[in-house]
Length: 151
Image: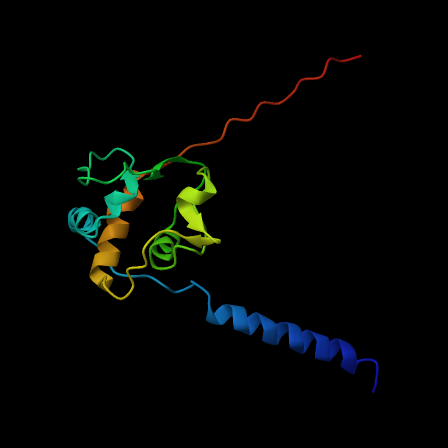
């Protein structure tokens, strides 16, 4: 086999492996605008407030249930994108909530969140995302630099 064909074959394999990732890309994915008021109603109807609070929202408690423990929204250091919120709702085990005791958010590495995919309409999903997204406040993290004395 000539030496030049090995680099060409490697480049072709690399390009083919990149194609697989593109098939699962979020590029070009965009749902229509939703209704935040309807999203709040869907959030309550599906009893998401059984396990979640929403930063800045006064949501009714569910009788005889423990108080919610995972807060959605509030100060974050990066934008919570449309796609991230959709993924969190339809695939809750994709990325588990940080900052909470593992037994509160997962069991055997899988999210404790109920998967609503067979019961939630696309419109309800869109509306819930429109309800949640404005509750995230992006803040610049504070950095404390150590100042060393000059010699």
